[in-house]
Image (tube, rainbow over all chains, first blue to last red):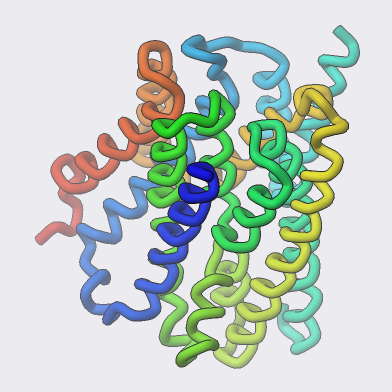
Length: 101
Length: 226
């Protein structure tokens, strides 16, 4: 039950940003300070999630098959492949490596 | 994207490509311990890839009251960029009442990207509604598929779904790493996340990094503050 509560709370919180954006006067949030903090927050959160999802393992930092997959992802990004191709190739590289080892 | 029909095909292909990724969300969500309906509630109601993956990512370490609170908080913080998109899109969409409520829910990376890439406003609005609608449709269909298949996959690692999630975060981050400053900042954030993950319970490192980012934006980087 508590899980449902937090799912609904989380959904409402995420939606609140979207709606507030349509309700607030643009001038209020158009300040450089707010814009910059928001941009840094996005970069930081994505970088943190990437690092933990890619190299974290229950209070440990490890280099495993995920790292190889992510190397493939970087190559795909450098080659300007579309989002779905980047994700697919990275997953496939890790899966193949796990199958082979 | 020059011709009128181009908006439709762009929206459809973006919707399909993004929607496909819902398979891994569905599978990872049931692996993290949520049931089918809870997984669908996240895709239907939260409807923001980054926030959803963060939510179940935190819960992967176990479904406890502390982790649930951290999950909701992390999802909320990650959703902040949708608010920025909404501010940018509001004058273009110019929706009222129920249309505005729907427009808000469809305000995500992809709908913003397609809408702002159009030459004129009419195509922009069309791109927004079509892309948002297609992503919503396919994302939820694929989530359902992933959630139903996920349990039978057993270990998502076999399909490399753990790497898929990390690669998705990287691909979302990639276009933002334009200058050396952003690169160094992202690297520091990743390093801080990993270092703090050695001693802190899962989910908390992301919040540590969030505090670091806001403090950095407010006090360290003074560009254009005058």
